[in-house]
Length: 110
Image (cartoon, rainbow, N blue to C red; front, side, top):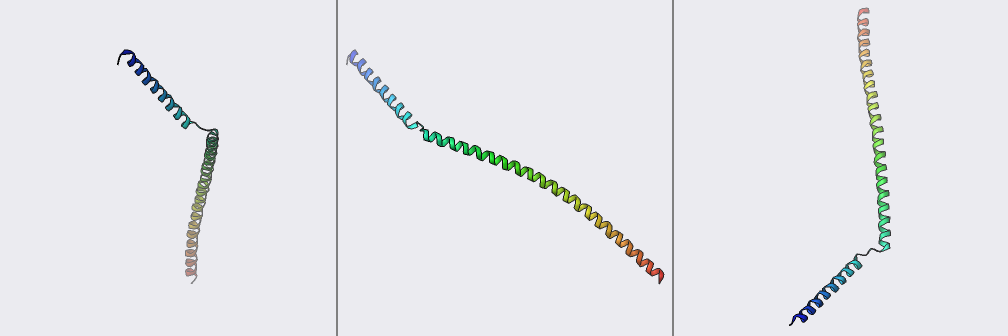
């Protein structure tokens, strides 16, 4: 094999390698190509996800507001209960004092 045949053989091998590379690139680009229907579907999914996240955020805000309201009502009810219990305790004590007073008055008259 002389020098010219060697150069021609190398040129043919490089050309075949170039054609195979170009063909592989074309096939990969063809398979990875995204259609407009797929893009529209992805946009619709992104919008639905965004709407769902907004709804979730609104629900969380509502629940936090409701929890704060209920916590306030609970603390107010507990305060009212404490006041009622104190009043009841005081009334029982007063009733007991009156009972003792009446018993003493009855015993004095006898």
